[in-house]
Length: 179
Image (cartoon, rainbow, N blue to C red; front, top):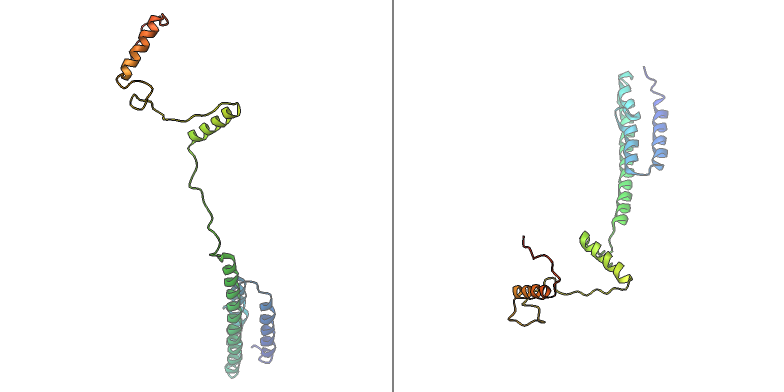
């Protein structure tokens, strides 16, 4: 049988452990683990409740009353500690995630240049450094947009004129082949 007189000392000792241990808690997870170590079935208060079967029948009511008072006090005390920890964590999270709506938005670039464009830009930089100049114009020259020749002459006529001019100068040894 359990000695009923030593119960008061155990209860005050557990109460002191709870008060002292709660002072060192830093977050709600630690508060949960601390609470579990006292109020769980395998915790210190839970073990006092399971020891009730070893108490004499005439003392069980008083024993149960005193253990329940400790359990109620511990639950309220640890709930308060847990609430403070959660509020503290919430404030810290709010400070970390707080946005200043008066600040300008961060500008994000919408992608990269095409690899061919990157190489072209590098080549332009190299040749510009060597003294060459870059002139940009239309990519495709057609008879319609080329104003340097009379409008009556077509591109086929221009090719024939070039062949005749080259033939007359005897610069072409082999006839022009089309594939």
